[in-house]
Amino acid sequence: MQRHILLLISTIWLTLGCMTGFAQDKDKKEQLQKEKQKLEQNIAYQKKLLQKTKETKDISLIQLVILEKKINSRKQLVVLIRREVRMLDDEIIETAAVIESLQNDLVNLKEEYAGIIRNAYKNRSHYDRMLFIFSSNDFYQAYRRIRYLQQYNEYKRKQAGLIISTQQALEQKKKELEEKKSEKKKLLGEEENQRVALESEKSEQGQALTKLQRQEQSLRDDIRRKEADMKKLQKAIEDIIASEIRERNRFNLTPEAQRLSDNFEKNKGKLPWPLLQGEISSSFGEHVHPVLGVKTYNNGIDIVTEKGSKARAVFDGEVTAVITVPGSGKAVLVRHGLYLTVYSKLEEVYVQKGDQIKTKQDIGLIMNNDTEGKTELHFEIRKAMQGGSEKLNPVTWLFPM
Image 1: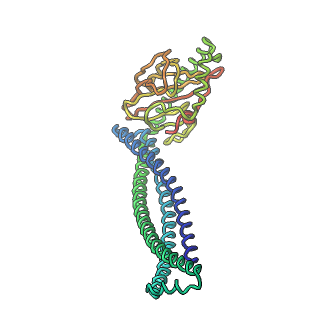
Image 2: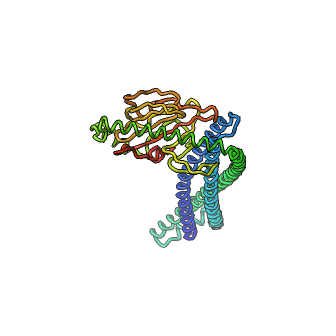
Image 3: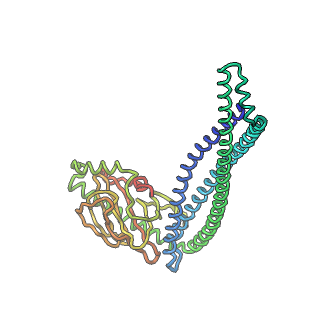
């Protein structure tokens, strides 16, 4: 009996340990599922954007950019699926260990119970039990023998109950094991499908790159045009900031403007995106052109989105300027104390200079480029300084999309 109790305790501890591990794994799996769902949504949206750009006759740089984003999302998805498979492998091993322990316990329980039954059969007559009690030397011995028989019967009942509960636990664990194996098989199939899709996208990317390389002169002309547009926007912004400093002495902020500036700064990393949904098509700062290999510079970020999308304010502020930039449509500058947000490549503008606007308020309709089949917003964040402004990386200020 003592041996059985020790075995039972060890099984209980093993089961509890696995349950704790499974609870932790459940949290990890739920997090993985959320990440997978987000990536799947990204891929679906990138596919949608890609289909829109393919409606044009010629291959465009934006197609290559979106395709690269889609491939990266797919790679991340494959990594997450592989992590999920590894977690399932660990769970399968742990569940198999619990099953083995329960099977051993069940064998021991049945052996002990068989011994109890054999012993009970040998002493099965009511006369034998009565003789056992009445042959006592005194009352106390008789009482102890009665208690012994009661405890013996209770032990038989509990032993039978343990066998039943152990069998039930064993069947449950076997069921869980089959479910985990089935889930693993499904995940491996999903992983294979994603790998096939990934290879197809890489092939498409290679073909797109080859076609674009044949358009080198056109791409270089496009870079020069964009750089010229960027310089025009840059000059317009710097002129506006310099004018405000001269006219209003902006560095001496009013208490209200100072609070707005402080609040903007406190919300770094938590600002909403300047549109409802989109993909960054050009990042902040210096980066290498994906086809030509030349270095280009972006004062902010470009975000490709769907036709008909609107730009929106990322924080409360005052519209400080509405300007037209040749080649880049219209631009809106919004003041947040010492900080400034810039929204350009707008087809229509819904605000005017001097307007007080709220977070997520629509600013204007984003311009659509029918030639390239893209709708793209240019967004910047700056901080006013004596003699100009400091360009800030918008991604570090915006809430992770």
